[in-house]
Image (cartoon, rainbow, N blue to C red):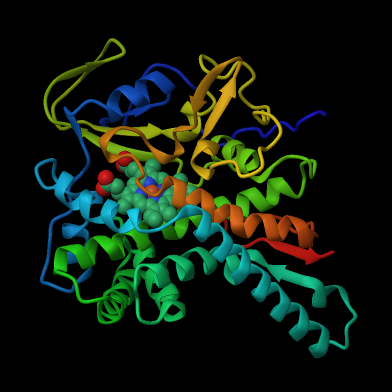
Length: 368
Ligand code: HEM
């Protein structure tokens, strides 16, 4: 079987030594990105807090933007909530909700349009499924009182989550934080913030992974198992393209002097194509036939010539994504149903402008 090439996005930098850009550094090689993520001298930019219940409070209370002294305890709150969720059950629930949604859309459209016409068979995956299903499934299991209503609220917070968001998005997110707190189970404020943090972290990246996997999956042979499809899409079309760290003192990275307070942009999209770890980096390399009951968490590990090289899209080290297995399970549930029931509509995919994420704005498919 011959597998497609997936060339890099035009703005993905080539792999090489760290490059100075705008007073900071851009890091592109696999080994250099891992070195920074696992070195405590490089820290996550911290978000200042704000009055309780505000977006600034949420940012200042979640583990994601916490200083090193607060991070482990806050991360543990999110990890404890995730421990109660079984990835296999998440996958099944995501598949069921996807099936129900497609059934409803199919019934509505065939009755609205008399059952004919191309438009009747079209489904916009991003809005109808990718943005909705993972969040609704997760919100229900995290005990939010109204999981369906949580979806737009989480999406609004996600749009303003990273410091520097535009004022209209921030105003919308302020109301959404209040909505989410009102529907959260009664736990201490720090735990509530970190449970909402799980949903917000899940939102854009999981939706982006689903849409990219559907897009590439409908173009690859059906024999390719969904776990391997997700692994290669995470490597070659990653929904999270980069993350940032700040140097706490003078350090050296790959022979370069990194000054105190320098910002490093770690490019997962470039590092995932590093020829030092991927001999034919732009080619889709499924690790082999999917195993029945394949553990979703193993999908992020790509076996190459007997080695296991992990795409860096979930990060690495003490801040690496704690929701990897959950994200893969939720995405697999949605993608499997779509691959079985839909075909490409042939419309182009555009991506929302964002400094570190690569999230499609829409993707149309058609019922088979
Ligand atoms: C395809 C989907 C996802 C991708 C690509 C992704 C990627 C990442 C990455 C790269 C980080 C680390 C950022 C850094 O080190 O600067 C991260 C952190 C995090 N992710 Fe994910 N994520 C995904 C889905 C999820 C899901 C579904 C959840 C929750 C169920 C989640 C929860 C978190 C949390 C709580 C953090 C912060 C961890 C900490 O503060 O230590 N993510 N994610």
